[in-house]
Image (cartoon, rainbow, N blue to C red; front, side, top):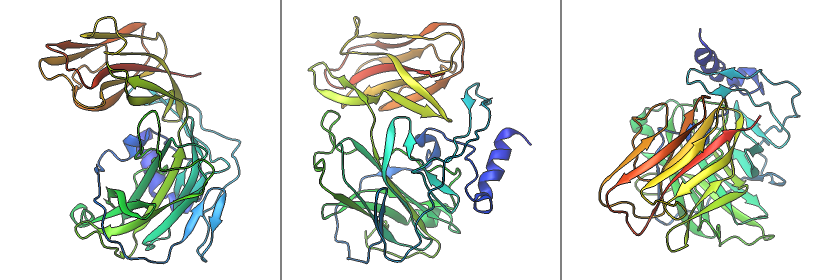
Length: 359
């Protein structure tokens, strides 16, 4: 049995193992790569009884509270995966929300959990309540439907409502149980990169409702065994990316996490700050693993020509809309280059950024 099979087997029996240390702590996107997020139109949603729990603020309606374990003094030794990148377990820590073999971590990279909840099986809704200390937050909501096929699970979704607006945004449901113990720390980031979620007021209590609904009618439903989870993370420091007019179009986190390791932003280039707009070059480190984030930020993009990304281990990776992150094993110093052949559009920003692993 290889390391991947072993970790999968341990995850399958997570309920029997209680709060044993996690054997995976990947980037949030890796957890839900098969899950398609989509916007949800505002609709009429019936009022139901709400159970609420937030880190630091608890409203109890008789439901058992998630376990918050003490810190663990042990951690598995670092190992190298088949992709050449290091991975290690992240032990439970104070402030983690743990239940039914699942966990929201209190801190991922420099993002901090300010409200998190793992619902009872069969519970159709709950609310997250917190006192914002920043308007820069991410919101995640997950829905797991054990015993259903993918087709059946697709008929349901989970919505997030804020300030009386039903279905502020939503997410599709997944069949079965999560593949990994750690729930995604990322999610929807409301607002503009430089302002954040302006509907929030620092120091004034905020609340969002997370609810299981029919994907077509948007009406609340009840499904035996369904499990909903949700979390609000206050974002850590970000670096703004601006377009040619100076407008902020994206915010790159200064620190990201992959498989239990922190990676810090070391270099970046975009059409707004590069000497040559049709060629973006960023140095890569020698002897240390690193991550490369590349693609488009903002709206628009090159309307004529083609993109060529070089300097990655796998240079067959396609360059498409949005931003993509590719993990790179340690190797000698070099560069990663994004070239564009053809006219450069006036809107949207092409960029390349390199994150280097911390010791």
